[in-house]
Image 1 (cartoon, helix red, strand yellow):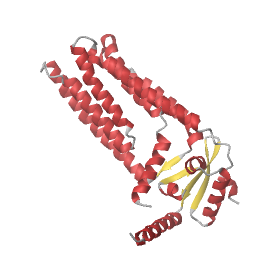
Image 2: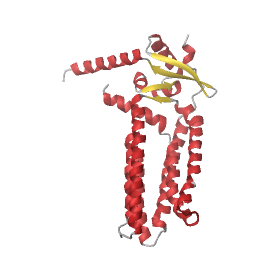
Image 3: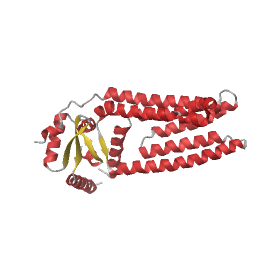
Length: 81
Length: 215
């Protein structure tokens, strides 16, 4: 899910559910924890008359994701041939 | 996770959000002009036989926007693209504008060559070159390889159309046949893609909002 959020500016929950295969309940739980950690921001708004929540990675989230990528790449690089 | 993986993820997101088949129908409406305009030009003249398509394209564009809003977005969701994609789309627009100028120049040269009866089939050669390069650029910048196949279809079609015209099988250098078949194929592909999307994705707007967990 963080990979998806990293490559876009923002997405709505419908897109995340479709792309990740998570259930709505699971997605809400994940997002709540990520929001508590300051990694994602939820922006509530309206699209026409319908409520719409856009989800974006915060700059802290982007930094954490980059760090995570660097760590994983280091681990993989350190593996013996 | 490498940079290539991230690029692949970004391409997948872009295609999921944009490649729903409706834009193929718009492209088909443009290609349909190549089929119908030559037939109309005898009664309406060269300018009006093409200009009459502007409101048609406007109508198709508006219909696509409405269908996208009411059918695609509730099923697929909304995406605001990142800076990489926005830059790529801006570059695509600039390149296509420049290419249109080049195509206009090439078309003018071909028209002059035809008036001077050079003997070489300049119009179908230039047309084939323009559609092949134009659709290839679109395929590259939009990461939709299918567009390249559309270019090949129309380029090869225009050469076959000219061949049939020279043997007296078709009129208007074969454009009504080539454009009609091309528009039909492209529209059919788009409508099939769209139907598959509607079939495979139910509207998911009634799920609980993640905003409900905001505390």
